[in-house]
Image (cartoon, rainbow, N blue to C red):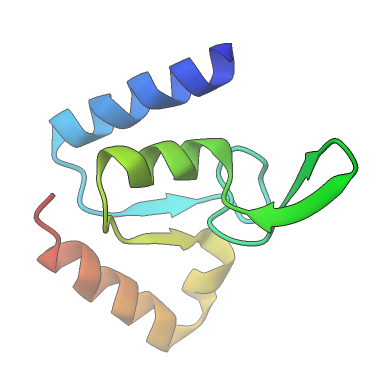
Length: 88
C-alpha cells in the first residue's frame, strides 16, 4: 500500500540519519509499539503500528517506546540507556 511504502521510506531516512531510539504515539495505528488493534477480515489481532513495524524492519533492535511509557522513571531511564547503546 502507499502508506506502507511511505513508512518504509521514512524508516530508511531515520536509519540514514543515525537515529538510535524512537518515541512513538501510543495506541496509534501507525506508530503504536504494542497492542495496536489489527483486523484482517473477521480476524482481530494485536500488534505494532505500520511505522513502528517499518522502523523495526529497517533497524532491528531499535529501542522504541510509547510516549506514555516515559512517565515511568524506570522505563524512561531504560529507554534512554538502550538508545545510547544502540548501534544500528
